[in-house]
Image (cartoon, rainbow, N blue to C red; front, top):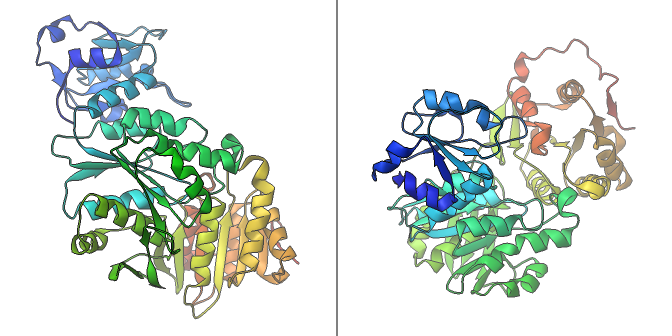
Length: 476
């Protein structure tokens, strides 16, 4: 973050001050870092007191002052007795967005927004890797994709950044519009769209409506990249005032991949007679690669530089990470899950070469609302139609997954459902054999990474019983 004067902060947030008279008298008084956690605060930081579901930052304002905060941003109606220099606003969360918007407009950085139902993080990381081959830039960290994370990411911009690519998450109509109002993106990328956050969006049509708000926010001199293999995207592309670039494998796309060849750890494809190669664990990374390629070409990068950028890409843990564990192969895809990403994971597993069985361990897909049962049954049917040997469903919706699989013809003795973690691990201990491939996936709230950790430590595991406990059910 470049230095910001305290008086500019007051202007950007329409705030009043308390205990800042001396600091404001010094025109150079300011800060270079915003901190929302008093435990990590360093002397000279600005502390921003945010209210959350579990914690209220106002409870730590006095601690922040003791640690050397230059000032604290607090809410006007805070009932606590606060001391020290303070910047007083009506709503600290809204004020953070206001300040980030003001700060972003100081720079001519090309801001790229990325949204969609699946692949947002991978696409954002791949765009950053490719553009970094020739340009200096930043990207949002981790899951910093909401009304708090996005502003904090924007505040890391510096004068030397030529581009910045930010992930934008949404759970309801209007969320993307609000994030775009803060980030002012000049380019937008929409990955694949599917049934995600239906509990709050209400319907798949609302998901398209909400994600499409990114297109509406782009300026006429900007550009958008969307997945052209989805026919619905062609119908909503008209919402953009700027050029829209379609990517995919079908003939009508502007950036079209041909000669696609995937083998574990290597993806090859051709665009306009130029062959590209990436070190990735699944074929569905192709969509992210095409989006990154389209963005890179739009900013003037040549094929050789784009290929160099692809070689820089390194996937993050929990997104189809492949590891060897006690004589079996574990594919860790535990970061999150929805129906579309589950289908992609199932395809990755079914096409994975194996000397043994292919086991799919699926945790519940959350936030699907009224469509939850139907989506879980459809998942089971999809697994049954694939080349997956065994299915282990875990969670409150396990029975719906197993029902869908059995109804679609999967044999009962290769389907099991569990409602407790210990039961799941016991079934796995009975099922997993040398040479098997196990793919583990579920929504973030299911904490399916626990299963991956157990598989990696399995040789140290000792079951107290040699039978499946009553809380697990082999469907027969």
